Length: 198
Length: 59
Image (tube, rainbow over all chains, first blue to last red; front, side):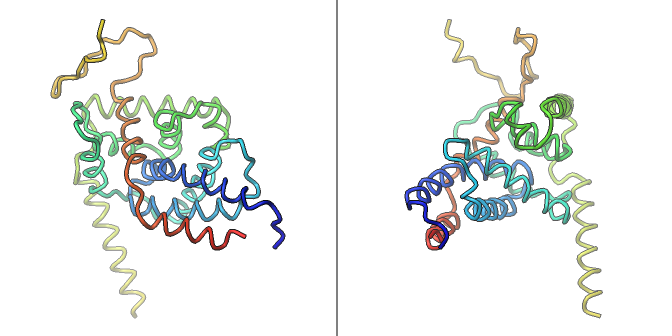
């Protein structure tokens, strides 16, 4: 109604938004580890981005702009504890088998498991800089913090990953920790469900 | 000359032969691959569905 911008603006926006979806999925998957939840996050991000499209400045980075939205959605979910300690083995298996002709000693599944051990803010910083190819400056802008903070987080994340991957201390698949955590969560669910029934 | 064909031998401990002082750790490439492997996945239909809905409300 109040939108009297030419329809071309909306379709330009939509085209750019469409183009960054794969990146949003990759970022979200790296952040939360669960493909289903990651895709939920991306869809939520798309809706929010679409709703706020008037605030997007054409010519600026759609990827950076939508990553901010995705990140905020993720943090909101984190506060609700939806992703805490949650890790789906099938993610790693799928990632492991996805690229064809991959013959490197480091399994991507190990990489992903190690990544998910990092504190969220360091994981996020490393994903943006080390995987997403953002500069420290861009990453700082996305995270709303100082460049030095991002550098520090990336440095610590790299050190932690190096320790895990090179010393072989990556948690094994179906590690006791994960199993125990799942068991505890399962019990809690059970208790909650029963409690609600009574 | 042709160093592009150098390959990592599986099962071999990481060879730290990169000369750059700020050499990235061996896994740095893996991180990128992890990300790219998701980027290259075909988009599930649910995303196209959502995009078409955005069209409807796009006025």
